[in-house]
Image (tube, rainbow over all chains, first blue to last red; front, top):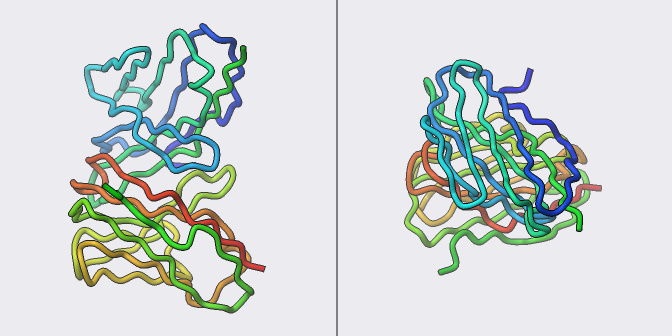
Length: 111
Length: 114
């Protein structure tokens, strides 16, 4: 089983739709959580960190569920420019000095 | 501000050849790392460094060497290239330990091994 798992998609949604992605992690000692965005043939860039109480940045909302060991990303009012691959990343825990990434969920927003 | 700079951006090698992927950052980050990205596999950690003179292995270190003689530079060496090393390689740095702070990625190096 992978340490961090994501549904690869693609999620095809119309402009204006709300879409949500989940990401599950297996290491219960994980302490830090992030969502990264990766455009086609580009490097990943941080979209947002995920805090225990949940956090929002404009149209984007991230949540953490420690009991069920998953994080989520909600995108409201999808734009064409949101089309990308969204990678979740998990870090921390005993002896861990690096982020572990999921394989990404591809989102395609259609006009 | 250049951020993280990787060279070369593209490279084609023959099986058995060696080469070095260069990575430099100008943000004075202590933490640097190398990932490879393959379709369906996501980003997998090869090696990382928490400071000059300190390196450690990640998830897929076999066939790769690293060194960290300065804070700025973290080169990745392929000792004897194999087709399985065909991939996109990303160097990343962080102001904090790599597992708690934002990672800043280079633009990637696309390597093909024939």
